[in-house]
Structures are given as C-alpha cells and as structure tokens.
Image (cartoon, rainbow, N blue to C red; front, side):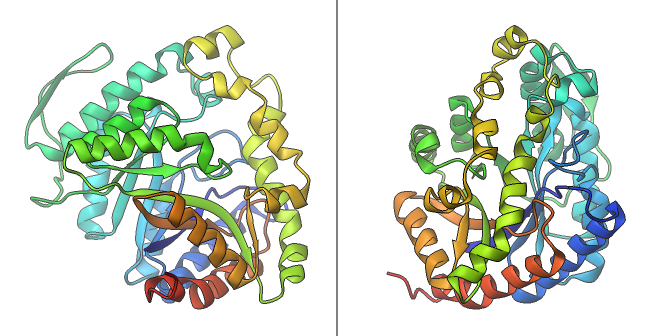
Length: 357
C-alpha cells in the first residue's frame, strides 16, 4: 500500500501567508525523509479558508530542490479555468525538470468557482470535458487537432514534450457516474474526497471497478482522510480538536460565507446540486465526538488509526493508497510534523510489512 500526504493549504489567518507556505515546504521535506510516497496539494482560488494553493508549480518546484524521492501531485487542475494545451506544456516541462515525480488530477472544480472566475456555470461541464480531451491528446501525441464548441485546434503540438513512453498517473474525482466509467476505461486513478463516507460513493466505486475489469485495467483508488495521532488517545483528541473543527469549517467556508454561488436554478442545471444540499454546512457544525465516532476524521493511537485503515482496505477492493491530511484548519506546524512522524513510524510499517492480515 502507498501512503501520502494531502494538503489543501487552508489559511485561517493565524500566521502570515508566507509562513504557511514555508511550513508546508518543511512538511514536504519531512515527509520525504520519512518515506511517504507522495505529497498532494490542490489548485484552488478565491477562498482562503478553503485554500491558498493557487500555484502548485511554484511550491513543488521549490520542494523538488529540497527532496530526493517523494512524488508531487496536484489534485487537481480545475480545467474550466486553464487552457488545456498550455497546461500540457507545463506538465511536460515539470516532468523534464523533476523526472518521474509528477502526478495530476484533472477536475471540473468546485461549484463556487465559476462566478469568481467569470465562467458561466452552465458551461463548466462542457469546457471540462473538452479540456480533458485536449489535455490528454496534447500529452500523448506529437501532433494533435480538436474540433469542439470551446476549443478549435488544428495541427498543434506542445513544447517541450514529455519523454517518449512516459505514462502519467492521472486522477479523476467527483460524484458523477461518468467520472468513474471514464477513469475505468482509461486506467486512471480515482480519489475519494475527504469527509465522505464509503457508502456515499459505493455505487460509483463499484461502477469504476466493473469498468476497469471490462477494459483490462487495475483499479487505483486513493482514500483521503484528516488524521491526527498520539500514543495516548486522550492527548490525540485534545490536540486535534481545534484544527479538526477548522478543517470542516474550511471545507464549507465558501458556502458559509453566503451569496457566493450562482442562482440555485443555474446550479441545478449545471449539475452542482450538491452545493445546495446543506451537507457541507451540517458537517461544519458536527460535534467533535461525532466526527471521530462517525469516521469523518481519524484521531487516536497508532492502533486506532491502523484499525480504521484496515476497515477501509477490507471494504474497498482496489484501494492502493491512503492519503492523510495533517495541517488543515489552522493546525500548528509542530502538530503536522508530529502526526507525520508517528504515522510513518507507527502505522505505515504495519501495512507495508504485511503485519495486518
């Protein structure tokens, strides 16, 4: 099993923004030393409590100079707001400068982004689907053309090009059936969003596994969960409470702010009804004990966390990776470092050595 760190770079105002970036860089270096397989950040705009990770290339470029082996992953590039041919060129350049260490997700993006970016919410799905086709065509072919509604490209090419035969680990994520069938057809990975229980996506994950089997591909499922760990259960709960609450509030912050979405009828028509459901707002108000007992977050001893991972592994065939979040919700730097250290030394070896049956 692979293990990674997932960070949204939530900014809750307790420290200067440059300090947060520098702390994350130190956490990446620390994760590399501990043997984590990948460090993941999102690409997101406009809402600081959700994320200030607007430029993955800059952060990963600096991190690559300070690390030796850890992979870097953007989960993901929000395609309706990026020219896909230009993005393919950026991916190719990073690959040449940091060989074999980049992975990426290609996503439609959250429903609160379109009004802020000036993109009609009704067009985001079409733009996303066309952009994804252009992105993959550009990466996989010396020359490419595309004739769509939003992109008309004739006999183009990107420079630089990725090395011949380079196959990137590509991620999709979301809740629509088409996301999972497309990933299964192409042999791409899927990431289960943090805070969602397995039952919420069970049907889609089953569809993904079935589609993988039909096309001769192996499932590649990444499970993401906020995690805090201590040798003493009560210490873990006490030290994690503030930032776990902040993590849920940060994820709901664009909705809690109010008046940040397009009109409800436009959101529904665009397939963004989830953002009108109130689910995220209710999660942000969940009592702390319910977060832990309900498996929304993982907080406890190495044995507690190992049991949670074992349960996910047994219930989710095709699980290849567990990604933990340790620095959200305004978490202090030392807590993130402590959680990474204990998880790497006390939890990861049990699975990598096959200690759990």
